[in-house]
Length: 126
Image (tube, rainbow, N blue to C red; front, side, top):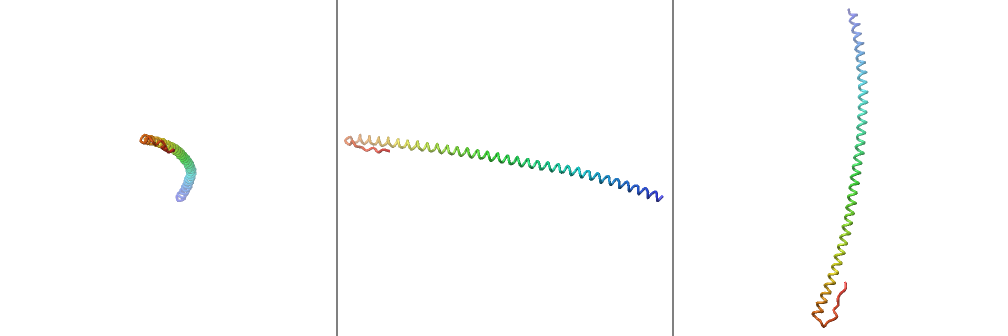
């Protein structure tokens, strides 16, 4: 009876070892598959990061190009405004000269009318 029990216990130990071996093998297989999946996920994350960095660089580049274009436009507008202001200033100076000449001629005419005996009234030239 003891021998049968020992034999049965030994058989159960073998079955348990086989079961544990199967569990260990299954666990190792699961670990391999999990590691492989983790590696795939890590690779995917790395690709996403790379793509994100590339897109960020593209966006920064586009923004910088846009700002450079804006600055160039502003610079051109400033140059044009300065050119227009200079032209207006030249027109103002010319108008002042014309008005001053007219004023001198009017003053000379008034002096001539007030003093008809004086014929030599100097008119300054500008």
